[in-house]
Image 1: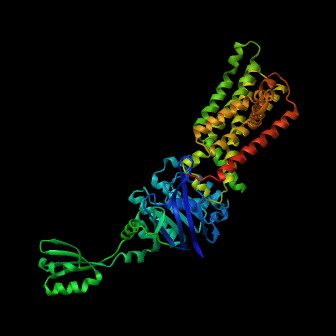
Image 2 (image 1 turned 180 degrees about the vertical axis):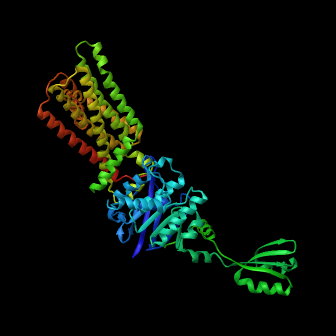
Image 3 (image 1 turned 45 degrees about the horizontal axis):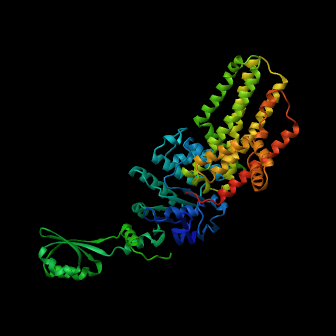
Length: 310
Length: 258
């Protein structure tokens, strides 16, 4: 059973005085997320990431399509006992203290009163807020609020956790802390679906990613596969600038500094390139395979136009 | 369901209690009641009458102001600040949210009215040096003020479920003013004929009839309020509030949030 199964989910906003013009915020989306998977939903600002999450959370209604979470229709209120959600740049009731807020959300999520106080205390410790006491949330920093946000998302021990831009707007230390928290949830075997435009976070945490752009799914796959698909290049450095002319047909790019030459070439053309360098009696300094990055994949997907079905 | 409703109700109440503006309003009413004996000194031998009129009117009017002031933000503030996102992603039905918010504000208003009433009776004791059995009759006016709050909260919540706070306040206040003169509107409708008469009659029945809930002059002059009026007004306020709250739920159930 898939943890999340999205079928043709779409959202149009109707604009104009008579609301006649349909503005697609999300074109029909098909996507599945496996149980226990950490899934990154990548896209630039305005790509449709938050729209997708708001649809799945029942905050807005879809124009068409359906979704199932843990085998249940996503509109079924009962399934919400098993999901947690952290909105983008969350704002909480700032007149409450962190324990009061978590107690409120725990009640709404049906956490039994027995042991609730202990669970809240343990959770605050886990997110590094064990010492906040009765301080109101209005006095919290952004990083602290984000940690409260994660705590409220998991207060009822959900199976599937949706996080909308969890690292957005945080300083490097805050990002590191939040990343550790997500890694901890991943280690517990939770299914995590998180949207981000910070690719290094996705690269570090995700098993699979999808790229969305202009409301359209552009690519989906396993992170390691995607990285290797954009790899296949090798950096070769040697001394002997005279040899460049003999290998120029293999070079994708080249840089000459004094007598030292640095060339980027396709890996499959590495053997003939090295043969030519030997023939030219150039002195080899290094041969380094280059790994593709998620960023390269992301950029390639957000610049082409063809939609991809998952 | 009950625990979710009570959680939303108590949180709405807690928000209102921690709102300093609310304290200012309560303080203002208490001051008004405390200074009422001074008005009595200007009007010889009618201290009690002036105090009852000023005190009960203050309880009613400031309750309505609090209902509008807090009510206009009940839903729209949650949408604007996106706190609603972390509510609706839980097993909370939209109708539970609306009904919980309604109960929370009504609870706030009842607690405030109770505090104001205590202050009012203290002022009455200070002025007259003793309380009589007829002073208990004044509680009917307080009870009717609470019925007024039930209706006003529902009306404000209805506007808050689809409009901005400013427009909600304008609509709610306009409806309060029209409702205060509901008897005049009904008389005017009865005197009109044709399409205009029908429209006015329909309007007279749609707007909340606050005029029938105003018995301040009556109790101030020691005139009893008949039991059937109390019963009828109670049923009217409950049914009207339920119908308007149901309207707010219907709108909110279909609403796409920003």
